[in-house]
Length: 112
Image (cartoon, rainbow, N blue to C red; front, side):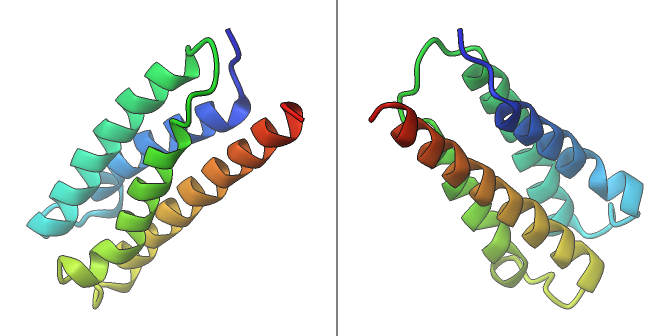
């Protein structure tokens, strides 16, 4: 079993994202809260599963897609005007993409 720190960092990002509506106080914004809680739970579950994988099978692609959605979601769901909430979603999304790309590059380099 190969557990990498990026998997656990993604797990932490998911926990933060899922709890951020309550910590940051934007629970009344239903689209932003639903997006954060739903994706937060999904990120936690998915990254718990992939943290325990035996070999790489390209799971990072889903983290890239989730990250890209988080970057675009403030505009798609209409909460881009709420600067703190939108910045939070975009920062978590960017971090997910960066960590996933990092894992892909590390895997390719290791397999050469």
